[in-house]
Length: 114
Image (cartoon, rainbow, N blue to C red):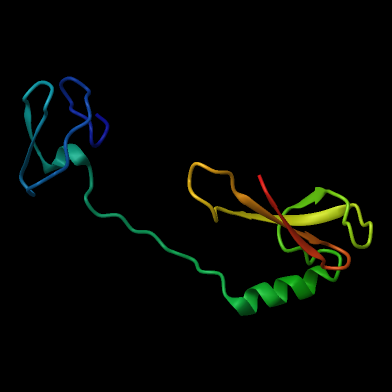
């Protein structure tokens, strides 16, 4: 039996409203809270810190200090053939995203609406 699924018909169980019973919408079966499995979960959230980012960039040296993933794109300022990029949704949701490019050599920045 998978937690969160009806043991009789296999359909998804509705949200647990009380800590005692849950009723399946498909077969009308009633089950106790154990049909959801364990109710407790443990997780850890790791945050990046500014100090860690600075030390990582210092270890990589000047060549590995890109601002994001690197693509083969020629810089219009210095002619370098590699630029890093980052994307963000600045315009409305039915339009494309904006891509920001940064030259890995001279740090020239440009943007492109896709």
